[in-house]
Image (cartoon, rainbow, N blue to C red; front, side):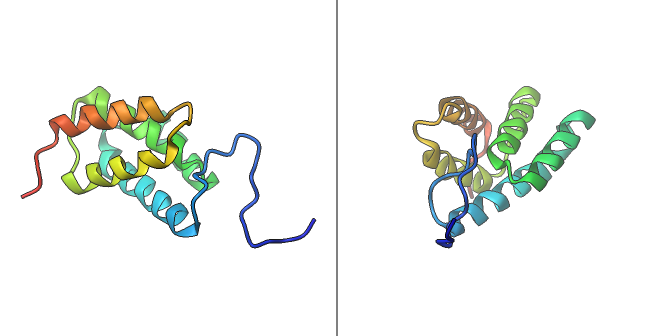
Length: 115
């Protein structure tokens, strides 16, 4: 098996097909989102997201965090909301994309506009 410099595609891999920069920004987005909503995540959710962060399962982390934000009916910063809206576009056609987009849109409606 030769190396082409690309990340291997794993069975069930949920990473976007874009380049390494997008991968790094997805990782940053997942960490930033968890830090933002850390206080509303249950102990079980915190354990789950930190394990998934370590495994690179960023879409699952973002899904869990967004679900917690929606459940708590809290807001996010406009900047974080904009990053999420841009991020979810990369998952067009993915089974979770519509649900994530709907969660982000619901949160966006509650988020104050940037100053």
